[in-house]
Length: 247
Image (cartoon, rainbow, N blue to C red; front, top):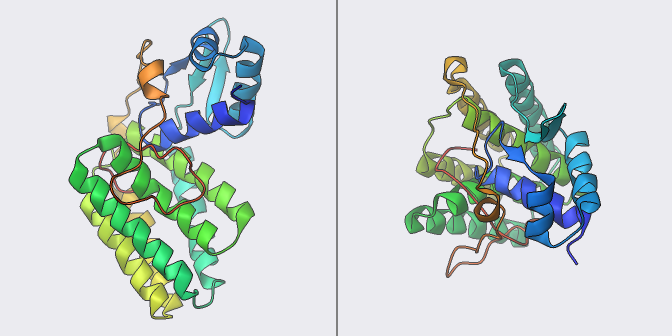
């Protein structure tokens, strides 16, 4: 039977893939039917997601994906810059096995971009940051970065980030190249620029909220990995990704 953690993970993956929009309703009964579980289990999963800042409950209306304010958007990107550059600063020169895994992830990103699947493409670009933390061996920060990346994905959806997928993939490749050369200062600078440029592209006036009600089954279905390349990140067993925006 599907567990509470699996339901929560599926929702977060759908957010990373930009398949769930800010303000979208998550019906308890629809989710229960989809996963073949009780509404109690669904409610527990949604409460977990509420504690992590992804969903909110509205009086007499039900559960909804959060709609971050512009100030919250700035905070999320600032947190990512601090944490991800700090992670690189403390990394030391990564082992060649780590570099190979990161290069494979970038190759998977390129395959997803060329494949034209918007959900897979966006998930892969966001997942690079989770994969990087996982490769560098910090399990706690891997979970933190996964959640922050999902939050900034909601932000980019709400405030219309316009960066393209190819540029994001190129940025990731440059970060990996700097790590491979042992140039940690350069890697930190590249990461800060990469995250900062996405934030700078946001437009507060373009905020919009999704109001779809009947998309849950398609939205939360597991997403196939890009073929033939295999995804590099061990943190997301059902690879699932969305539009070609930079993460």
